Image 1: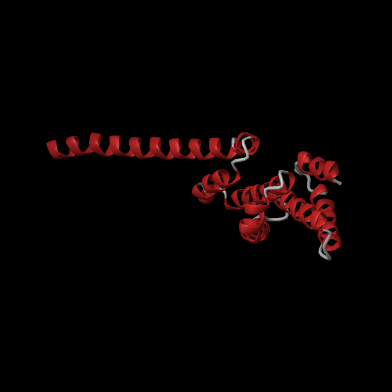
Image 2: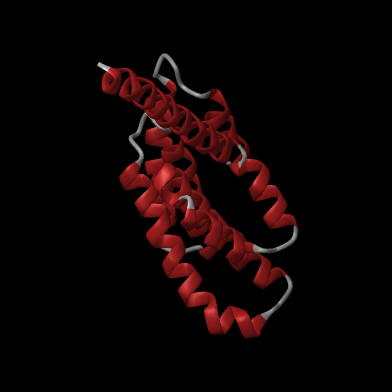
Length: 171
């Protein structure tokens, strides 16, 4: 009889610890996701694009679509920064790698995010911006795709209007 009384508090404490740990991890994950916009501002203002990409890869499991979008955004901004500052050495040495990673991550974000997810809107807008900047043949197709998805998205009852406004501001 004594063994049962000893085991119950230990089992209870173990369950309490596991539950507390899961709540702590869940809280940390939601905080990390909520702060991505703030982190983006911080890293981008210091032009630490590769460091932000490394951070995003370390938390990718928490929200793969959003992490992929932010990685693509980082590479896009990094390429623009290299052009603006005329850092041609890095641009020509690493630019092709950055463009490749941009494309992989932007399309991965689309693959992972449903069309009801605002990440899908942001990723499509980023792809359109990229092709528009490059003035390539995919520019028109990217714009048509973006507008089509925004139209469908805007008809959702719980559509995030900030995503729609974001696109409208870019156009």
